[in-house]
Image (cartoon, rainbow, N blue to C red; front, side):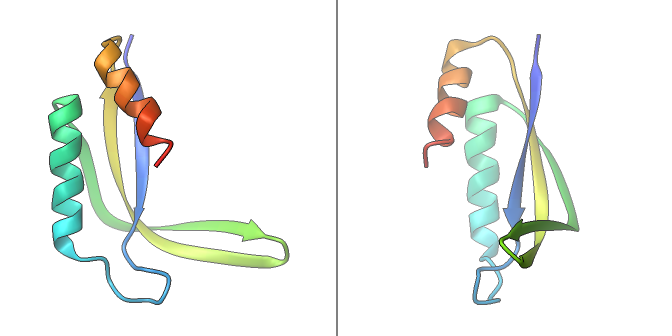
Length: 83
């Protein structure tokens, strides 16, 4: 059975400058190479989280891919969490 995973990717660095478009293309190519497909949600979304008394907000896009039972795909998913 396949599982779906979402990657939330910020559109801006912490200093407010936009992430370079080529980095999104590189991520897409990497996901396609390892998982043979993905879904890209290009509309900006907002993500919120709290650290102590401060609430942070990011503008993000979402990449979704499916992970089947293939050992190579599962290993890539595990190793990518460590980076």
